[in-house]
Image 1 (cartoon, helix red, strand yellow):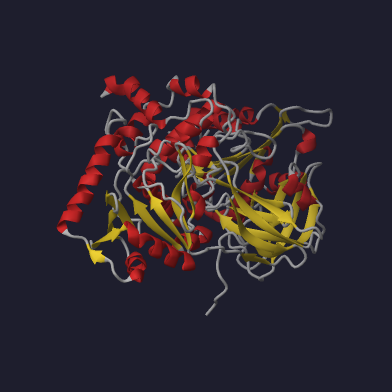
Image 2 (cartoon, each protein chain N blue to C red; image 1 turned 90 degrees about the horizontal axis):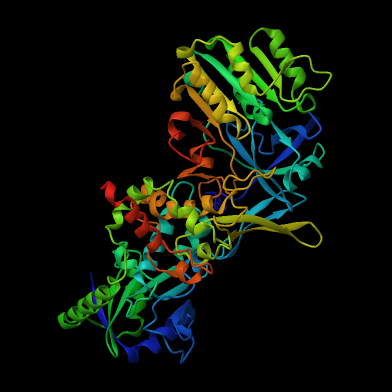
Length: 348
Length: 277
């Protein structure tokens, strides 16, 4: 894989050039300890040290509200609506790239979701090696510390003013070359990147699963009747915050609006959440997951087993966002999986 | 080359041809696709119907597949926003359709075998597609037994049709209601009370059942008592659905998507799933 070295002084020109063709998002500090990807503008200070963007990048690919079709109530003609603005997501941590790779697999299989596919195709992912680890994160223990694909460029900060940039796609390389004076990384720079990566990995490994993540589906298959589900879920507010911030949650609702004259309208999809009380409720009010316990358990089974059974990876990338977002303090995949491990360890 | 962009979320127009009231809350709708083609569904599959401005919802198809006839039937209970809007339509009105979607009853497995069809409440609606498909090829199947259970006589649907079936001799029909009124002369009790009334050649019988969620475990229990194995039992399950494409997450039964893995399941494939029955 080709790797280049880029210096901080080259960034303003790169960003300015990109922002003329793309909506460019970069990490910034919103307040102390609170970061997000925001639209780039001249002189914006980039938060190189950010631990986690509080809102996951899924919103750029699967917006909270997205129009799917327009319809005409008189002719009953309907047409698809696609909104896929060219965009660059700069500073996506590897665990979030992993989450995007999962969305790619899940939304593009079977009948591909054309709205997602088009947005994804119009998106450039510039991954960034983290410099710090959020205190709620555990990505190094769920196989999400590194990604082999899914990025166009992979940035690693190797010094106060220098980066290595590994090329993941021709599109990425072309974007890097727009300023014309970017040189291949020296062996020393590549070594610097390897060191930076092992430094952060060592930090990230301090906090994690107490077992090999690949055991998770097996341990869940023994844990359907665990008392843990009730113990935690009895405090669940069914607010769906864990679903909203999760980079791999993609469930959605579909609703529509007609114009004032009731002639034409649009059908939209909105983020939905399996923790919400009405998620599995059908007409006539039968609810297939009536209790918080049913919904809470379903979410962890989905992250720890169902997704794994489909694609061979955990549906949880260990970003720790749900842990921070949960008002009741019960959303915590690390704690849940570790406790279930303790409960079932004697069976191994 | 057709350059019209494709999206699986775009319905195509169909037209309401006829409406027949079946009970206080249930109406049979006959539709035709505006593209002039037959729906090309299989028994047990469903479609998503749209009333623009109100919404979209999934419905089982209640007519059998027809090679040439472009019309198809859907019986619908008036119970929510979309079903109320459908009931407000008059013949000539347009509706949007996506599908057909999902799995179907494995009719070819049933060839040469006896078939027991167990319909609880509105469960007759999807099973009717299977029943009449088999009746069109009646000589390919062995005994056909139909059990129909309804909460009370007022809620019975397709009453004349079921009486005609019984009179025809092609199908052995057993009916029951949970709560009789003074007009009801037949069996009283839940649908499982009909099971002891028929002698089945257990090894040679397939069962297809659709009904309210509570019904399945009891009817499956009765099938077990008669000596039937899980792979002889087929169920169609209801879940909340939005996309019909295995994406939106609403219809999950553990890790299965009811919309693409179901709605028709062989019991063997779901008995290990805690959320199924």
